[in-house]
Length: 207
Picture (cartoon, rainbow, N blue to C red):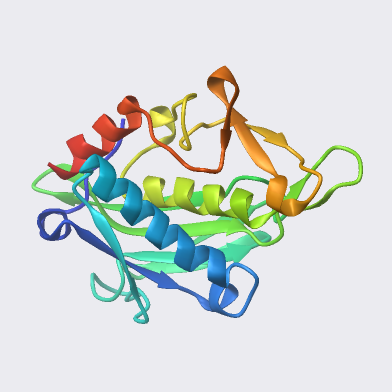
């Protein structure tokens, strides 16, 4: 089950997202911008109750200021600091999945998200034989999936029927642009879509 953000953020119905230098200076730059747009498209279409806004202000490492969410690409250990506490995230740089750390604080005895840190694999690869870097459509799905974790969903909210699938099947295309992720009932993404279960889970966190 997911966790809601702290009330001041939840009441604004908006999360600010900062792209670190591993994104702005790398091959994820265009995908990141498109992922923000795609999340907002899905949010508007399904009245999720939250939108994302890009910011150039990094999260404050010692307090609540700055961006709500930091987005990076990496391989191996990636380090962050939040509220004065350092932590490390380990990511397989060739995997087809990222990792989102939700930093929680207790407000009146109830845990709420105060910051979120996303790391996507720097060069996700696809294929068993003749592996190569996955196309931007696959990267977009990875990025948007992690943005849904950042807005409050947990691994227990994974859904076999849409982009929030926890164990999708990668289908290598003849070209990177033809790469797809297959989810339940042989549906292939992109295009990205949400099922009623994921929609309801997000709406419940932001109502």
